[in-house]
Amino acid sequence: QVQLVESGGGLVQPGGSLRLSCAASGSIISIYAMGWYRQAPGKQREKVAGISSGGSTNYADSVKGRFTISRDNAKKTVYLQMKSLKPEGTSVYYCNADVIYGPPSGFLDAWGQGTLVTVSS
Image (cartoon, rainbow, N blue to C red):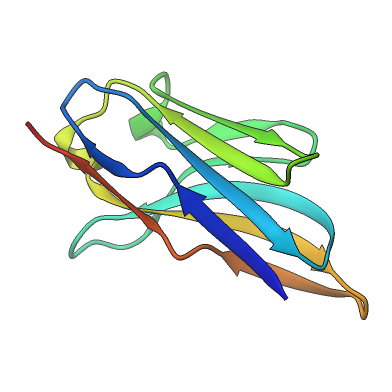
């Protein structure tokens, strides 16, 4: 069984910063790409940032220059450093990872339960 657990969400003022963490646990053999998504009320889930197993990153245009994704492979953890947060960033943020688990071996597109980020004064 594989679990992703996010932490670090909360209430922050516009212009503030927040750091999200997502730790993977369970019978994990390896983790490939990891990423962060968000879903605002009444909107579709959107990808915010992604990072490959080798460390290559990509970002949504709306967060480029303000958000930084990173990972610690030894800790099976991915981070999202968010700066200059805007009210439109209020969403539930979800962690995602492509996981090889086992034995017996298998592939899982794993998701965390989400952590709420509220940007408001």
